[in-house]
Structure formats: C-alpha cells, structure tokens
Length: 302
Image (cartoon, rainbow, N blue to C red; front, side, top):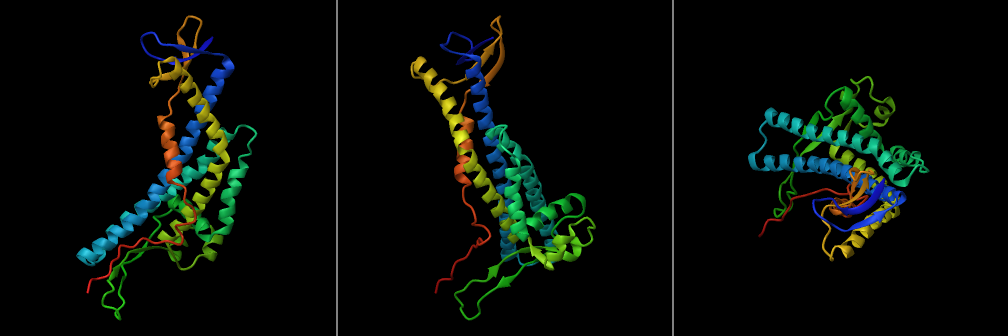
C-alpha cells in the first residue's frame, strides 16, 4: 500500500507522501469532525422544530386578530397544526437524545464512558417536571393519541389605559384526564401533573434542559474537535505551499494498491466543517426560554 495527499483528478499534481500511521490519523480526524457536525445538526433540527411551535402559536393568534374567532372549524385546524409540530419536536428529541452518546463516544475515543452523557440527561430528568413530562408524553404519542386536546384564544386589554392594545394569543394544553386514558402513561408523572400542562411552556423548559446538556458536551469535545480540524488544515496548508499557493480543490488523502489504483480515499475539505462551527456559534444560549415569551406589541399613538 502507498499513501499520499493529492488532488484526485486527471492530470499531474504534486503529492505529499504519507505513511500508514499518518493516513489513519487523517481518517480519524475527518471522522471526528463528521461526528461533531452530526452532533450540532441534530440539535439544530430539534431547535427548528421548537421554533415551529412558537411561530405557529403566533400565526394562529394573528389570524384571530385579523379574522376573529370562527368557531369549531378554527379550533380544529389549530389542533391539527399545533399537534403536528409538537409531535415533530418530540420525535426529533428522541433522535437527538438516543444518538448523542454515540457521537460523543466516537469523538472522545474508547476510554470515554458513555454513561457520563446519560447521567447529564438524568440530572435534568430528576430536576425538572417539564422534562419528565415531555419524555413521558413522547412515549404516549408513539403508542396512544395526539398530545394537545385543549385550546384557548384569549383576548386581553387594560381597560384603564386606552393606549394599551388588545392582546391576542393562543394557548394549547395537554389534559391530565386525557392522559389517564393511556394505561401505559407513567403513573408517577400523572401523580405530580396538574390538571393541564401548557405545551409551549413545557417545551421551553425541555429545550432549555437539552441545550444545557449540549453546551456541556460541546465544551467536553472542544479540544478533540479543535485538534482534528487543525490536522486537516495543516495538510491543506502544506499542499497549498506545493500548489503555487492556490486553493487545493478536490484535495484527498489516498491509499493506493500496489498497481496504483486507489483503494480508499478521504476528502480533506473544511467547507462542511465551517457549517458545524457556524451552528455551534449560532446555538450557544442556555437557560433563556423558560423565562421568555415572544410578543408583537405596540402602543397606540395619541
């Protein structure tokens, strides 16, 4: 076997010779960056589904403001649209939580105990009712019924101040009496559950907990991911110095058979890892949602 770094294309290009150990190190670095990207992408999918819940609630409230309340048909359409988004959130949360241990384990290596990841989620499970509730609700959704069955379209105004606007909103609830029909729903959660749970507020608490774990894990893998990127960048820089300073498009680490045919290639690209870094920078806030609410509000001019 022969190993090198070169542009894998027709024509003559300079090559950097490698030994097997160097080639394997490049493969491990690229795998590390790939796992880190998946780790960030799955959080982004989860957060996007959460944002969909909040924006749909605002859309429904805006429709109420413009067209007024139209009775059962409007309630039914709201029921379907908000439940679709809640189910997507719960499903994506399962995807994230089930896979994150594997991603972190691959990055940190065989000596890393994956139980450390599970313990971080268990901490929030024990600490926060809304986290426990959302976990139990996900199991119920998979085997029983859609989650939200109670809705309100409140309109509020401070009558003592005519400059204050009328506030339109939309609330969706999970009812305890409906969950009791699911014989498999966790009894300990039912026992501590109020008669109804605001799904938006529960989602905020749930996402806050997941974000807290994610940021801890991101900090944990930061050095490994940084070293992996530095190694790939180092080979790109070395090749650029041989390639008249030009950007080496199509750069690969190649393992060749004795007859010169490639048996294995590794892309030495960083554009996709730039997106991983962008997502990590974008999704860095924690502990913000449970204490926050989005309003579209202005005072009327005199």
